Length: 111
Length: 108
Image (cartoon, rainbow over all chains, first blue to last red; front, side):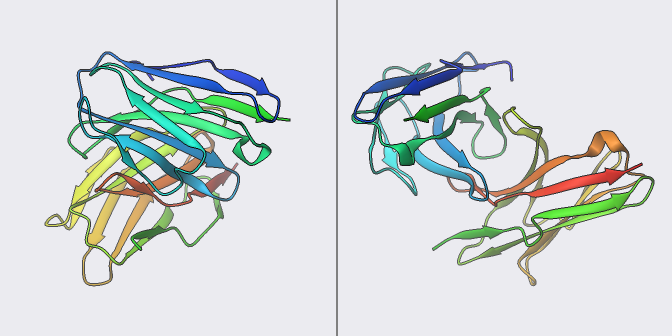
């Protein structure tokens, strides 16, 4: 998954704690996305950013905030983590809607 | 709401046979449909894209079709091999909406 770097790869949080998932790309694409993947649910879009300075809600935005810091970076913040946010989180970039490149994922457990 | 549906959660195919996976879309008309492969613990990897005005697209042992009348795409793997075992995801353009995926098992 060259081109999209996610940190951290693993994280365990206690209920109520906050954290930020980082995503950085070196492919100079405008659009960036955050998905969560749960067993039996597929990939669900949390937020996306069509370009620097813009963000929009996806299918499951509640409990999350995002920041498109610049063209390279798109972060996802959990202000007060809940067990329902236990999931694998993927950042993706896309080339005009025709092909998406994914990061390696962040496996988050909220206890 | 816009939906991409993959009807089969899992599919078992004998090695050497053709595997066929189905993707249906509802409540919108994607300009493109994309297919991805995902291995356990990894992010999805792009395989093929087909546009709405293309009937068929091929890449090595892979073939994708797009039927706008049936609102369906079929994904074929010919001469399947155990290494083809993975989850395959269909996605539609417009914020790249994904189906839930089909777990394909190629049996030796």
